[in-house]
View 1 (cartoon, rainbow over the protein chains, first blue to last red):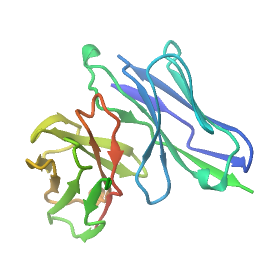
View 2 (view 1 turned 120 degrees about the vertical axis):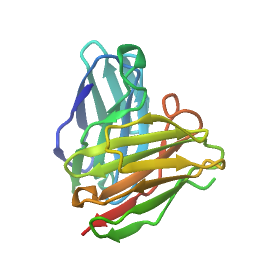
View 3 (view 1 turned 45 degrees about the vertical axis):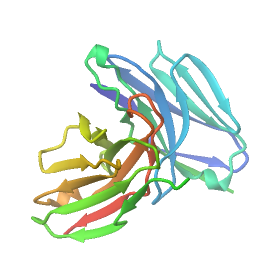
View 4 (view 1 turned 180 degrees about the vertical axis):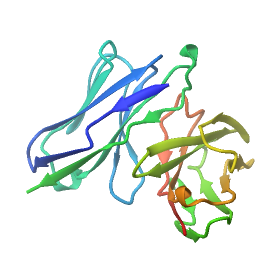
Length: 114
Length: 114
């Protein structure tokens, strides 16, 4: 089984930087995803990490430490449109009795205010 | 290229009824996965279909079923509806098995059970 934890809600100011953490406990590991979901809309893919380190993509970066079971999503130069829910999803490994299908955390609701 | 489409977008049913939801994947995508999203449980995996065969199944009762057609379109069916089945049902498609490929989500079907 898997256990994924992320904060329920965060607030930040337009133009600032915010870091959304995700911790996980899995018997195996085969990749971690971050998705963004605006209210009433479908989740959209942001990033995928399978090796340790930082992956940068424009204003968004994602970091992974497999030994610590830890990831974070870093959002820079926050804009009002970044107000959304951010979902962390971990893919287990059949070799350890799990499934390749990602398990999602409950999401972090980010509120960006002026 | 058109995205994932789901019909209907909104549905209201009463307890005991059954419902069928439809998903058309992105052209060329052969894998379709279904998820249930509720405020309390977050995004939970229902099942994955690839080449008309169910490849993975989540922890849901037998009232939840699905199928995939030769053109990769998929349907999911929920019989004997319960109040707790009220949720956003999301379909996601990927080029190959969801295990190895990025998933693209549809807008979802909002099901309300009265």
